[in-house]
Length: 74
Image 1: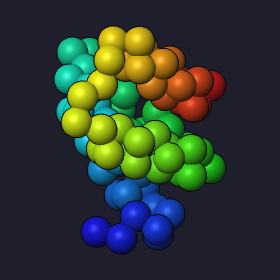
Image 2: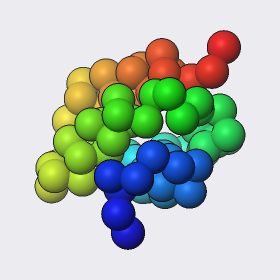
Image 3: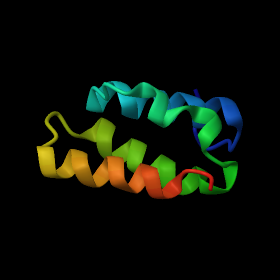
Image 4: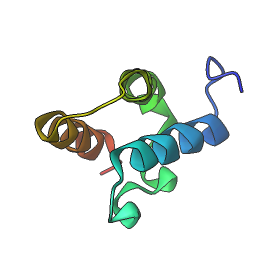
């Protein structure tokens, strides 16, 4: 998968992978449709950070979830 290509499929993949890695219980809060393609680069940055880490602290998880919340469509 080439994540350099900005499209809805790649955006959905990254959102789902972030949710899985963070073990988000309320996955409904992070539906790919809730994010705009204009936020692609920011979400890609979060995705790369999350997937690069073996362990994510609670405070990091809170910050990531908060940032995803900020990136959602209004």
